[in-house]
Image (cartoon, rainbow, N blue to C red; front, side):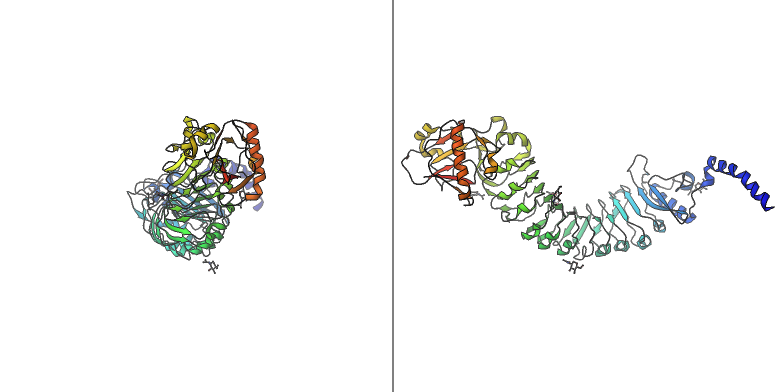
Length: 539
Ligand SMILES: *[C@@H]1O[C@H](CO)[C@@H](O)[C@H](O)[C@H]1NC(C)=O
Ligand SMILES: *[C@@H]1O[C@H](CO)[C@@H](O)[C@H](O)[C@H]1NC(C)=O
Ligand SMILES: *[C@@H]1O[C@H](CO)[C@@H](O)[C@H](O)[C@H]1NC(C)=O
Ligand SMILES: *[C@@H]1O[C@H](CO)[C@@H](O)[C@H](O)[C@H]1NC(C)=O
Ligand SMILES: *[C@@H]1O[C@H](CO)[C@@H](O)[C@H](O)[C@H]1NC(C)=O
């Protein structure tokens, strides 16, 4: 009997295979009914009552997969591992007007990822379930609720149970209340993004104590108050820290410098009042440093800008900064965007900024900068509207050096440039010609050099250009002494400058040289190059 049975089965086998290929229903992916029904109910909650899952998708983990739903096989049975709702792809399921968050989600215990995008509009308010999250604790790694303006209420403290969560994104909803400190229990978190809600209160001091794996912390566009807790700095793996557009105050904790891997620090538009220079010192990887719109105050000259070699964006506008523009900024070769506008900066604008190879936006407007803008014409041409220097009443540009089409907007011509003086003119014009020059040093010879930047620069530490064009021979410069405004580099550089001056004399081109009437003055005669850090003294 047995033998014939098995022979019969053997004969039937091809038939069975054929049958199962042509009639897929018989090959439904094995799945517990409770799991399947919970999935239907959850989806139906989002997309509306008219959606009949068992009708449309009888085999949701098999041959009738639901858009945005993924499954995986565990011990021979299929379970839902990911649900993604909202208009992401063309064929994504869209939420109904009367969408609701079904608590049956908490039966889908194998869920790794739950994402609800643009589902709850502000017309229909709903809250995030406050309990039962522990059911998902074993597996949930990603929870994203984005752009659901109808999501009101507080961030449930219960989310702190999701001990394997790696990404918590609750962005652009309408969440209110405080940041639950339970979020600090999510020790595997890599991304914590809560921006664009109405969260208030302080950042809990313990928030980041144990978040050693955190890479991105974005709490921007909320109403958070208080100061930056120094514990934030325990998250030493952090790459991006965005706390912009809140009401944070106080100064930055010095420990912030522990964030050695940080590439973005955005603290714009808060009430922060400065930082000890240590705070930013250690951030050697920083690329984007955005601190604008804070009542910071003070000078930024002392700060060790040289350390931040990878800086590409530096936004320090509207910060009440005083003092001069730090020259060290000229050593940040990767800088692309530099905004120092709307502060109280004074002193001159050093022309080395024009030599920053990647710079394509420079905002200096709304300060108290003085003297001559010494940028070459092609710099203004290259920058176009991304250069601004207006609202600096004592700043001027050299009309000789810049063609009318490229003059910096809102800046006056320098006085001494209006009538370019020659050797002989200046004898008759006398001292009056010295126009905007520093009165204290009362330079007796004004040397106005228009130049292009190349080789010699490097001889003189990027401070002087290679080729000068000269149209008058310099005759009587004998013993040159060089002194920078701040007294540095004096002896080391003067032979090079001497050589440069001979080169000027040799090349001949456009040179404006003026000597006052009292030519007999033999004490120290100053010869001033356009490069503001240098003053040449002739005796
Ligand atoms: C879905 O459709 C089936 C028939 O295909 C029906 O038996 C079932 O009641 C429907 N369910 C809902 C929730 O409408
Ligand atoms: C950082 O964490 C350690 C323990 O992990 C703790 O002792 C220390 O106080 C924390 N630092 C801050 C600034 O909170
Ligand atoms: C600063 O943030 C406030 C809200 O805190 C906002 O209303 C304002 O527009 C922001 N200002 C800027 C310059 O972004
Ligand atoms: C600066 O950037 C370069 C290239 O992007 C990178 O290799 C280097 O590690 C960075 N330096 C620091 C200190 O992060
Ligand atoms: C601007 O600087 C000049 C000196 O260069 C000073 O006399 C003047 O008071 C400053 N103006 C403001 C508004 O700080």
